[in-house]
Image (cartoon, rainbow, N blue to C red; front, side, top):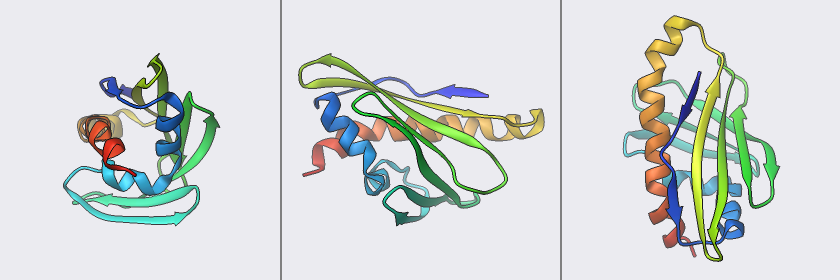
Length: 135
C-alpha cells in the first residue's frame, strides 16, 4: 500500500526544511488535533497515539541531507515507512511530499487506508505553519 500526501510549498530552503524534519520533536507540531499522546523517546524516535488508535513508535531509518527523511515503524505488529521528500523550488522555497508505504493484508489495508491518508494529509497541511513558527 502506498499513499501520498498533497505537496506543500514552504518558504524555507531545503536545508531548513530538512533540519526541521530531522528533529523528531518538531513532529508534535504537525500532529492532528485528535492526538492523545506524543513522547520523544530519543534523538531519533518518538511515540504518538491518536484517539481510538494504538500507540505507534516512529524511528529515523534513512536520511539524505536536504532531500529525504525516512521514518519507519520501530517495533509493533505492522511494518511501514513514512518518507518526506524535499524538493528545491527556488533559493528559499522548498516543496515537501509525504509518502506512506507498508505491507498489509487486504482487510487491514481497507481499514487503515482512510485514517492514514487523512493523517499524512494533516501532517503535510500543518507543515507550513509549524515550520514558520519554529525559531
